[in-house]
Every structure is written in structure tokens, then in C-alpha cells.
Amino acid sequence: MKNHALTQWRERKEPSYGAWLNLPDLYSAEMLARMGFDWVCIDLQHGLISYSDLLGLVPALSGTKATVLVRVTSNDAGQIGRALDAGGHGVIVPMVNTAEEAAQAVAACRYPPQGTRSCGPMRDAMLEGFEYLATANSQIACVAMIETREGLANVKAIAATPGLDGLFIGPMDLCYGIGITPGSFGDPAFIEAVDQIKQACADAGIAAGMFGYNAALSRAALEDGFQFSSIGSDANFLREGAKQAFDAARGLDDPKAAKGQPGY
Figure (cartoon, helix red, strand yellow):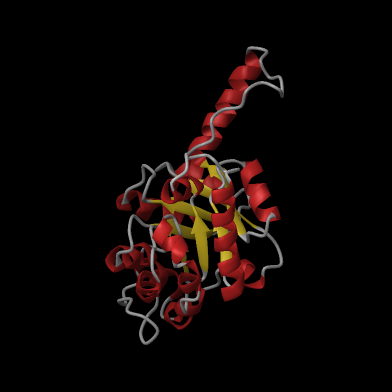
């Protein structure tokens, strides 16, 4: 098993571009993965995707270079294990607030003796046989989200958790978490929080990631020292593409015209 995105993050030689999947559509998922994204994240937390949908989406992404990440709904060992057994190359775990919680997530991603993951890699065993077991612990990505005041207060200890591969910021939830209006990305408190997270990653030698609601936010994050960022979601690509075409058809395609609201 070779995790393309994880190699990029560890070497830190080039930005890593991702696409976010919120829709349970096999065709759109495969189309995005084949466009050359370094990674795609299947969102089980806030998207419209169920575990049953995940079982179809992962095979649709096979054969592409895209690393398949799964954002699970919570820091639950059983759920993390099922996402990996279904063929995920890593997980993004929300609401990680302490080093102990980060260690729990890491343990759920690793086979003994490094962790507590139970052995039953259904899809991975089909594709790679027992060779998967020899490489999984070093190639599965475990990423923790920092979204609360508690998580921010403990960010250095969380980042230093052995086996953790990265921290990830959801900008809206981070705004909520530190008590500012969602979307206030220019607020000094938000900027300071982001810098804290980014510095904690640099000190620990792990990757820093940012959810980008659009290409401009993603580019800004990557130019600001983040190693990986999503440039948008399938739902947003559909929304913005349709809006652009609709506006153009009505003669409203002035580049100064108001842009659509970024989101999932």
C-alpha cells in the first residue's frame, strides 16, 4: 500500500490539493478523482453520505492517484475501523480536544502492537492480500480536527501525539469554537488560532490542513504554509458551475458580479 497524499505531507515539497465529497454519487466522485486531485475526502459527518454509500464510493475511486480519506462522525474506534476496512486510506477525526483523544484516534488506525485496530481489512485484503497488513500502520493517515477552545488550548500536546499525521481546520467550526461570528476569517482571533495550529504542526513535524470552501481560500492556505487543503466540494462545484452557466446565459457573467455563497 502506498499513500500518495501522506508521502506529500511528510516530504512537504509540494502542496496537496483535495476535493470534498458530500454527495452519494459514484459518477461525480470518480470524475473528480480522475481530474488529478491528490486526495478526496468522503464526508460521513456533514454530507449526505451513509456507510452504505461509502461501500460504493471507495471502489469508484480505485485506480486513481487520489488518496481516499474518510471524515468519520466522531472519535469512535469501531467507526474508524469500518471506514478503513472499507478501503479508506485514512481518516479525519472531528472534535479532538485533548492529547488523550488524539491517542485514541491513532490507536484505532493502527494494528497491534502500535494500536488497537481489529484485523479484518475487507477491501484492502481483496486488493493486496496480507501484504496490506505489513504496510498499513505506516501508510494509514490519521488526522485530527481542532475546532474548540479546549482543542486549541491543548493543540501543542495534540500535535505531538505519536502516530498522528496531521491537524485539520474546519474554518466555520473553529470560528464557533473560539466565539466569533462564523465566516470572520479576517478576525485577529481567528488568525491567531490558525497560526497556533500551524505552528504546533511545524513543531511536531506533522502536516497542517485546511478546509477550503473555494479555490481562493485553498490557495491562500497553501501559500500560507499549509500542506494540504480542499479546493471545494462536489456540491459546491455543481452549484457554482450551474450559477456561472445560468448567469452567462442571461448576460450576467460580469466578473465584478456578486459571487455565490461558498459552502458545502
